[in-house]
Image (tube, rainbow, N blue to C red; front, side, top):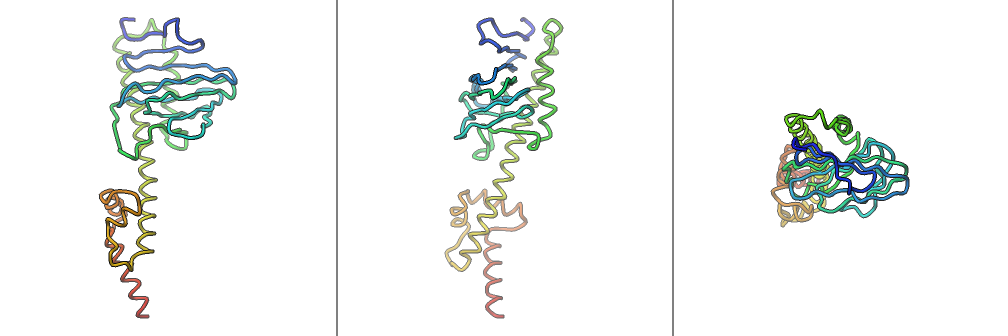
Length: 239
């Protein structure tokens, strides 16, 4: 279709259809109980795909996870991994896969390649899933090129927002864990005159710069906590 909105060709797998909004694709896969399909991966860095279960219950083998995850209706897997995600329906199911270029590249080690998300993880999920479901029923003959362009942008922005939310959530949990580990090291080794920001960071398994940021976010510094622990210990000895 010259306007950019097309249906998958006849050689697509049975019970699978595709809508293309420019470069963004919405692929609907219908599975019978026990049926297994391979879901599309991202084509290159900067792309994100979301496998949203619209109905039923599916066991997905998510890239990076050792064990399959059960994904139910109203939940999704958000992935930036180049590998396919395998999906096996436990009951009859419908999956909407959205593949979009978001140009999200990075939060370094904290950015998960693939992650399951549900309503408890982000308030953005329900409206995004509703929009995607509605996009699959758009009449082709009524779609203008202008409308297709804005639908593509909306889908891109929605996936970008979910991706940023997922990374932020991971970063927050990692920040809390890093601070807790570092404070454990300080409590155990404050009497060691060789204790330094570098050695604490090494024990905590993060860089010194990252750990300094973590401590600043908690209103303190690494060596400030070391001095505080030593002072508290010295005061206790004088009592």
